[in-house]
Amino acid sequence: MLRIAVPNKGSLSGPASAMLHEAGYRMRKESKELVVVDPENEVEFFYLRPKDIAIYVSSGKLDIGITGRDLLIDSGASAEEILPLNFGRSTFRYATIPGTAKGPEDFHGMTIATSYEGIVANHLAEKGIEASVVHLDGAVETAIQLGVAQIIADVVETGTSLRNAGLEVIGEPIMTSEAVVIRGNGTDPEDPRAQQFLRRLQGVLVARSYVMMDYDCRAEHLERAVALTPGLESPTISPLHNEGWVAVRAMVPAKEAQRIMDDLYELGARAILTTSIHACRL
Image 1 (cartoon, helix red, strand yellow):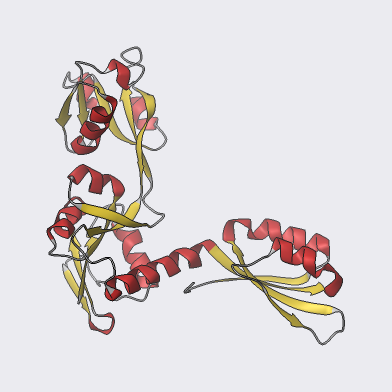
Image 2 (cartoon, rainbow, N blue to C red):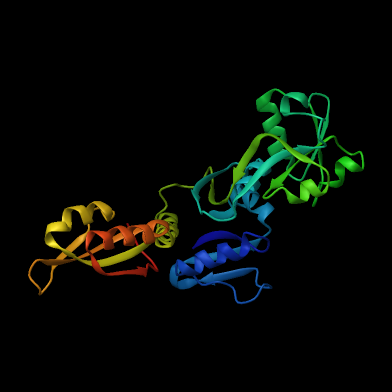
């Protein structure tokens, strides 16, 4: 069986389980379950702390894992990212009291507090900055006020909590993160079980990003309509009973669907419908 690590809690847990459910896998029914066996799909799911998943996968005990890109890099584990999952996005930034520093070039000799020591240490090494890094679990905003550090490095969304602490974001982002599928460097990339798992998740990603659009169009306007809805390879076109009319079906990006419908209507298309896609293989 394919052995897969899934986040057991935190911001990645719910979206990861939802995606796996959409991909047709059996999920746990309560949070106390640590292992779920899905015999029909020949998969075992192990629910682990997100920070530990990269370590388990790199050890070879588990074949694949879902975790954050930040957690993978911070762990230093010998595992690689193989598929971004488009949820759990975050940005890592430096912050400090206004006037302390403008960016990493001013960090020489300073101390930086963070919950992601590996990420910060790697970033400083890449920049050639000699600074100390102190590891703190949880919120790090008070580290400067308490004299533990002059700089902090943390996830920044709106920046409100930093401003409330009297801090400002400085420099360019350290990195951007999201949920990713990882595998150990020693894992066979051609394993058919793993390939099937990835195809299913890719199908979910596409299904979430596209809608199916159907509409009726006058034949003389077809080329202009198809230019708006080219589909993935080509749209499906069928003649209608009324002479001079055709029915068109194509996948279109969900975020552009409303604009495309407006443009088709102006072109003379009618009976324009969109429907959700629940699963696909491309």
